[in-house]
Length: 289
Image (cartoon, rainbow, N blue to C red; front, side, top):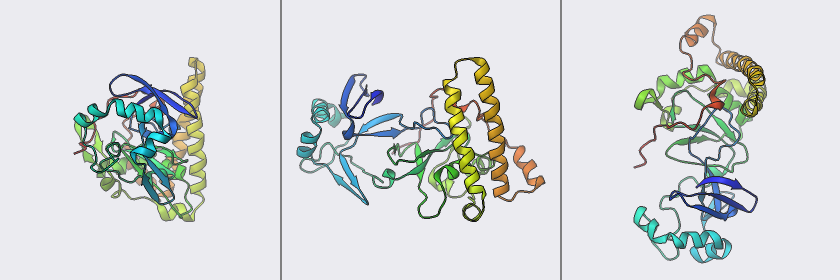
């Protein structure tokens, strides 16, 4: 459902039928669906979904219907009220007390980890960080990447994804989609060279994390700015920071002057300074079949 108000105890929102409902927050998880996505976005919860599972450590456990009804009476009542509609519209699992579960529960444990989020359908590569591991992704429209035990900050990985160089390389590998968009599914992302060794051995990793964090903060300031003078100042600061980030990434990849000129001939399609101010545009969705 689309959130209207989120508190520590409940989420009030509008469901897919257009009705306003209030459900227990602990029965739900925030979902990233590639709506209004932009680099280093801090709030990646485009929607909230009912989540009938407990995730602890490396295990995801089903919450069977009797327990679910006891722990989350509001959400259980809501599901019960819409049970016939659900059965008509979607496939439900077989088995006793399992009708409210997912038919294909994929990567529930992996998605509960800190990660980098990046859309599957792109004009340019963009990435944001879910540092708390709270946001689940729409598997049809959003990818995620976790970095474990390598000493590289997630914001550093996102900084590389958000650079002009990485975007140019990704567009070469990505598949074609509608109206000039590109498919950047995991199989395409794995084809793009990524400088893990350079990030582990050099000082640029920490520097990229710093600049990425500053860009994220400036973007939120731009979104909150009320006057044109303030917006103009923040835009200037952001433009300088993006130039600094691009230069760091080109150095990370070891590009010489001629190679940098080649990259400059393949600029991003979307101005990153203006990216945070774009609305939740219609993005072509992948076929979930």
